[in-house]
Image (cartoon, rainbow, N blue to C red; front, side, top):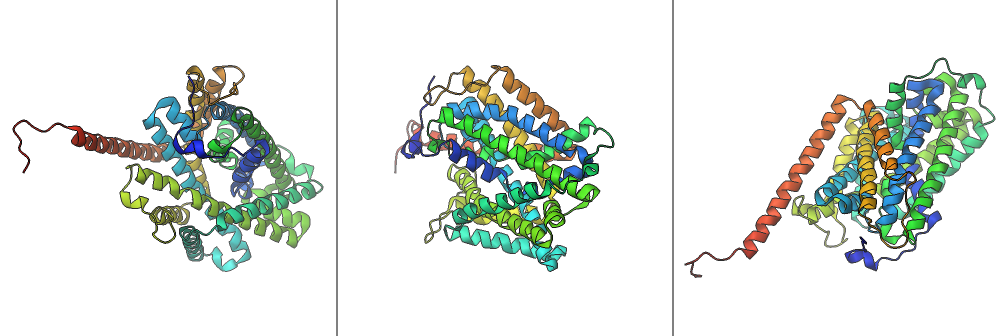
Amino acid sequence: MSTTTRGADSALVRAIGVWGLAAGIVNVTVGGGIFRLPADVAAALGPAAPVAYLVCAVAMGLIVLGFAEAGSRVALTGGPYAYVEIAFGPFAGFLTGVLLWMIGSMAVAAVAVVFATNVAQLVPVLQHPMGSAAFLALVFALLGGVNIAGVGLAASLNAVATVAKLLPLLLLLVGGAFAVRASNLAWDHAPAMADIARNSTLLIFAFAGVESALAPSGEVKDIARTVPRAIFIALSGITLLYVGLQVVAQGVLGPELATARTPLADAAGRVLGPWGRTLLLVGAAVSMFGYLCGMILAIPRALFALARDGFLPRVVASVHPRFHTPYVAIAVQVTIACAFAITSTFERLAILANLTLLLLYGACCLAAWQLRRRRVQAGGVPFVVPGGGAAPIAACVVIGWMLTGIRAAEWAAMGLALLAASIVFLVAQRRRQAGYDSRVAPKEEGHVEP
């Protein structure tokens, strides 16, 4: 079976190559999580924290094998949404789209929490809960207004953010290597497997990004070659960066790392002095602000599309008469994300986002298996996962193991979200069917038009 691009995708220009796609994955992946997660993982695992990164990287390696194969077989814009829809049909595709929206919403809220924490180190008045809430409301109002006005600030900020986030991190990595104390890296005991599972699940937040970066698949050239190579180049570089930063932060701060609110900035301050700490705080703030701006540009389009397709009230699909932007969807999205950020902690938001991610990843791995079984391909020779059908199954087993770290309350929240999404889908389908029946139903016998 062969699948060709559909509709508007055929008009897109395929200009993204291996290094361009790899850079896009790195840019989306290295976001706000790495500026906070070293402390959270160290609090649970101590000097053994790098083990959780390696376990998470292995799990992500198995998962991205499925992404690489699915991405080399489906050339449609939409990434995971397109993979699952083609493999399993509209209902599964719709739920995947909802999961993608949930991931974006919770990730934006989680990064906003870390952003407020970093800025509060520079502006102490924001350390008070009311000050933090007011600051978050102001940030989301500003970003919503910018995106409603259609200003191209998001694209410019993303370019600046890439440099702003990577240069300080690389400086800390190189400079900190000479300040590491071996005693701070010594293990007192081996971590429990349950703790590794929980913290590997938490770290998925720092590795997430492949699912978003593959959304413009309709604009990638030589997709069967480009997607798998770009994924593995990006994942290898990200893993080395993360493990190195965790080792440096642990080796420099020791037990203090577990309680640090801005762990990498604190480590930079110890290594480079006050200017180093300020550099990391400013770099983190610019990085996260750029991430927030870019995501708030993208995520409301999912709400807009759901409303356009009849899954949400039509008003959500309204377009501003002057700025030509989906202003209602943007306003709804920033309100939801702001409420999440003000009322929840980073750890809670990250775990919920990661539960959503793991379910999405499992769906994509199964989609890769199904697409191969049905011999779906977009043109050219698709990438074939080594080990045949065993690779997606192995990925699902690893995902299942990581899901053992999810608690009952978190599962309950996810179950309610998926139930609500299923009801929305069924109601929308019935409305569509009713509309279709009303258009094609024959007139009753004996009825006379007035």
